[in-house]
Length: 181
Image (tube, rainbow, N blue to C red; front, side, top):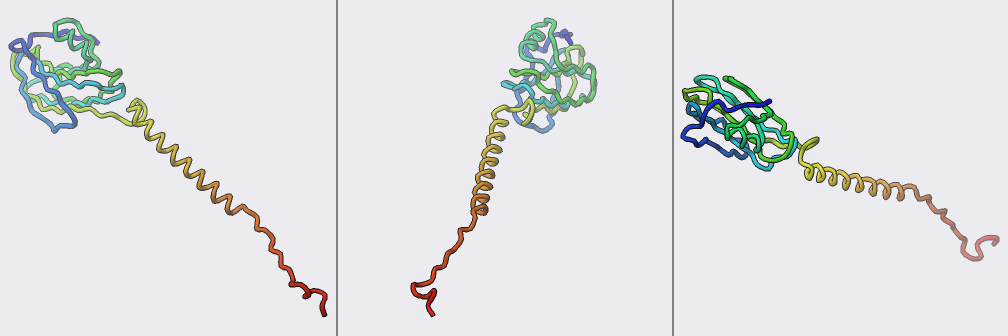
């Protein structure tokens, strides 16, 4: 879906925060006719952006977009956003990234004259499995292959030892014992 910016940012400069890891819930006040954003670089397809936001005084708009669309939006152009929640008070989002690169979570207060305080939490997880980290999946597969090979070698060795037929034992009489008498 497309979104157009509704107003200007305060003093011509947006507020931004780059988050790494899983921070605890934070509180921030966004001025009227302004916005705040967080961004993540070098995400891979399948990474999941988690967003929780609760607006304390009034509603806010939250959206997620990639770097090129954020650049358009911040210049006042029409931009494509992948996830849009308009005029919300509380929202929780789990957004699977459709392609790699830099991704932005925008808390948009450009359509309000008054400041809004939000409590928010934003972080990224990288699942292991389908759509996850290919090198991690390759490592898990390699370890499983090594374990399977070891089990097969041990099983073959045990089978070989137990399947050997016992050789007959011959006892010979000492010379002159047979037929003497």
